[in-house]
Amino acid sequence: MLFFVDTANLDHIKEASELGILDGVTTNPSLMAKEGISGDNAVLQHYQKICEIVGPGHDVSAEVISTDYAGMVKEGKKLAELHENIVVKVPMTVDGVKAISHFSEIGIRTNCTLVFSAGQAILAAKAGATYLSPFIGRIDDMSWEGIDLIKEIVEVYTTQGYETAILAASIRSPLHIVQCAKAGADVVTCPLSAIKGLFYHPLTDIGLEKFLADHKKSQLS
Ligand code: G3P
Image (cartoon, rainbow, N blue to C red; front, side, top):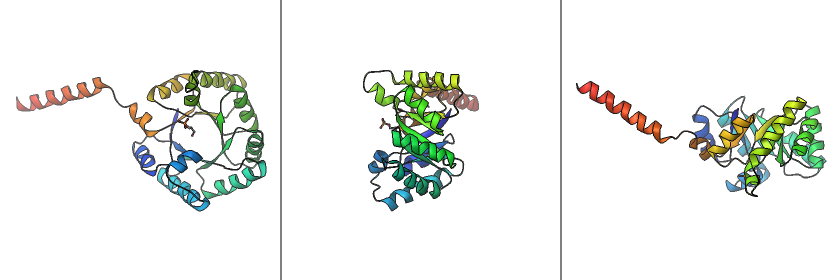
């Protein structure tokens, strides 16, 4: 399972990259706004910076703002030309699916976002999306089990042999990451805090403290 960080914060991306386990980055308009990035040029420059931090071979999802087919195609082409790492993120709408299908025909990689059902997942795979982003945290927020959607899509994609990668999004905790790994997601995109939460276990800290204390004692005797 690949690890992407879900942020437009350059410090978080650098820190995740330095951990040595980062495979890519996803962003969305809300995350860009959170970093105070506004205006077309500033947004494009920010994507460029993200691509440079993560380096070659690390996919960076950049989302289109247009909602009509022609606008999505124009914007997506501009984003894809920006850097070889860019994957064009397109919402799950009628125009979005048409745009994904077009991008697939001309060799531009895509991430179909805002996916909340197995039916939508089928449409994105049929259109040739590179990645599919089901949002599990937002389903949990409505008191349904978000992870059940990942399990259902894994079953459908395995049965049908679809090649679209399942990129579990709206991850809120380390537990979500473990659940996604068990369910068979291809990728998880998470806030840095959720990735860092995977490291900690009190028995690791206690065990290390004892190893070091025993080593120190053995040096004194
Ligand atoms: O990038 C899309 C997704 O990960 C958003 O997460 O926490 O805003 O539901 P969240």
